[in-house]
Image (cartoon, rainbow, N blue to C red; front, side, top):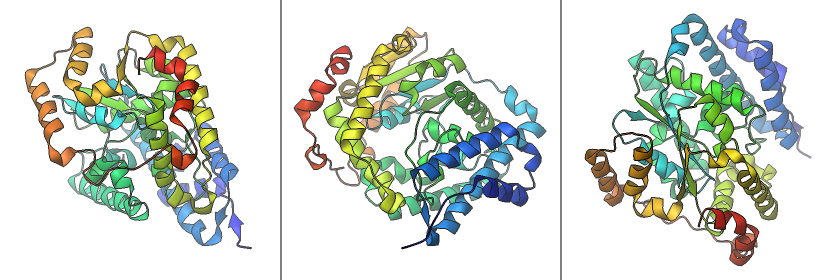
Length: 386
């Protein structure tokens, strides 16, 4: 029987402090969150001995990056005095068109969304050192190439990866650097990578996220940030507490469409990296999604006027009137130039969703039926007219 090993939180953190020389910036709370993170990995499974060194190395490097951010904020406190004004947030289930929406919103004048290279190489912030910026982009390009090399069908599932290190990042990618969430892109070389759960303390996680936006814009002034999270729809009250002036774009897609797509994506995003530990069960996933939908329907924050509910079909057919209505509701100018940019992008064959081949998925492959899903999610479908 092959030897399998568990990650050691204390050893990894000690190695990161020794390598970086930044141990003074690690407080007890950060240690506790990292211990929690490692417990999620160890609870999911153990790592085969040949894979263990690379897993520990990636974990160690991630801790180093977190310590570098802590150093930046301690040595340059003005970073945290940056202002984040009226950000837009895209909410909704994975595979509901959220990245598409994020991409289009980021095209307006002065708008910006976190990119992979910003997130995984946050120190120094972009704009301070041209050589460091170039190295960060090169490293992130190589990392995306590694991911796609291990899971080639990711390109048809998520064609935005053709931007490599400049691909649009999810907000969970950003705030998981504070170790209260296991987000896959930090840990693709760790086979015991579990699927993401909502953070234990969503407000704390989003405050860290807000500080990271300040880090990103320190030397690259930004008029408005565009965030996108696949967990935000479960914690909208936390998003609105941390960003009280936010505007939400909540996309709703029929479950019979996104469930099969999500199952197929998970097999690509986790399967090649988990190896024999991969164990997503379709019926369990559907039960989890149904419980999540009930939480959404029962949560008064879902219906806050700052959150605008959008049908997926409307979004992908003609996003201009969808956006214009929401802009108008908040007194934000929606310009003809922006509308033109959106329409040009929608017609551009270089941005077709199937530019790397049609992403194939089916309910039947996973033993699921459309009519059953419609019945299971009937209240949700009726409430949002999907």
